[in-house]
Amino acid sequence: MKAMILENVYDTCSTREPLRLVEIERPEPAPGEVLVKVTACGVCHTELDEIEGRTPPPGYPVIPGHEVVGVVESICEGTGRLREGDRVGMGWIGHACGTCRFCTTGRENLCPEFRALGRDMNGGYAEYVVIAEEFATPVPDGPRDAEAAVLLCAGAVGLRSLRLAQLENGRPLGLTGFGASGHLVLQMSRHLYPRSPVMVFARSEAERRFALELGAAWAGDTDDIPPEPPQAIIDTTPAWKPVLAALERLDAGGRLVINAIRKEEGDRKILDRLDYTTHLWMEKEVASVANVTRRDIADCLALAPQIPLKPEVVEFPLEEANRALMELKDRKIRGGKVLRP
Image (cartoon, rainbow, N blue to C red; front, side, top):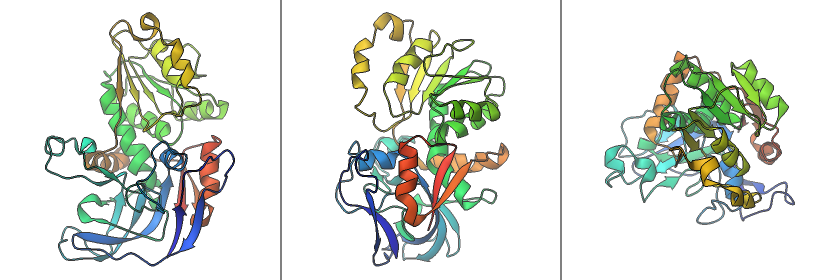
């Protein structure tokens, strides 16, 4: 099968093609696993985090990709929930132990044995992928494969962020950054909290226009002052500057939710400007999003047709994964990017 593999940590400022196209043997499912023929795989900023060493895989080579939609090609003994021909989706969560205090309380995303698809095990930048049956979620009718792929991470983690924000219907929500996740969170928020205006902070004028097209009540630059202070802000950027800006804009008693696995080191010195009175006083809170659960994925897929949630996607052939990643790196973003093997 064809696959795009990562073989090392790379500086994408100098290496614009960090993934290599190879022909390798098709994997075979072990007991309890299914083989899935990939029909679409989303491209996520987390892949850049892997490539650039902020969350590197435990070994090389590895096939990235954790927003995977496909069709069950074959099953192995020990399965029974899925059948050949079923359309399924696979997100960042590729394994959890199922027995620890986190797994048994609905927080499998915090499991010490958590393994990520596309980092700790081969993912969906390929023609086929193998995964334990329990971590493949049926995809309902409605979204196209490419649209469903974006929902598996940008959508599911966005929904988790929205839940962690603890927004009261009628109070303003802020979104910092407006890429694949932000444009879905805006649509979900307008459905779940119809009386809450959404205010978007984005560096790019194109992103701000896109936000207004989707129904944002206001859109401005990272440092701009919104019409009213948000009760909650969700940050989806890879940088530190928007975090401090968001804390300044946050209302008293508000909560900032940081939806990122790692932050880039380039602007870390900006944290020297952190001031208790300006950024943290008045009972402001900061929460982080760690990974995603299977419930987040299933709930997002179920919510999508109710809204209806329509991800905007740009599709690329599998062989052009590097181009898709570099466009993401260069912030050529409008919705999500998806590979089609």
